[in-house]
Image (cartoon, rainbow, N blue to C red; front, side, top):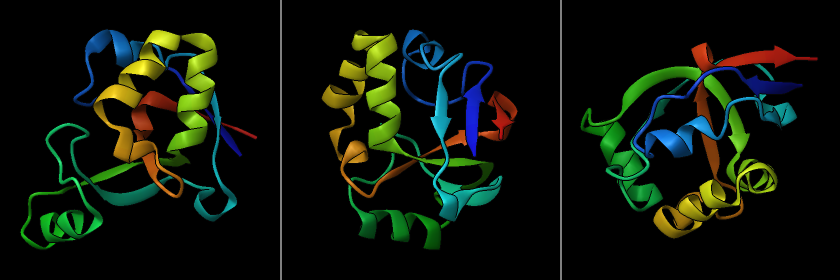
Length: 115
């Protein structure tokens, strides 16, 4: 399964960086192959570690989101082909989020499913 970003996703990245996602087709890993409900934190204001993310969930600082999980490194690599500036923003401002094994969640209302 894949998703196409159809509108500017919500988030803490600058507007023009978030707009660069529009039209991009991103594969959804088989383990996440459906719309999901999960906890989310801000890419800039959120915790810097996995332990911090767990604590944010436990103490109510994370909020429930509905969307599609994608591998962040794959997504940013695809973004780089369309907008090197936007991809560079992720590398400079949120490098921990594009390490192997990390995921982005795109809000369901910003996406369309593709077979």
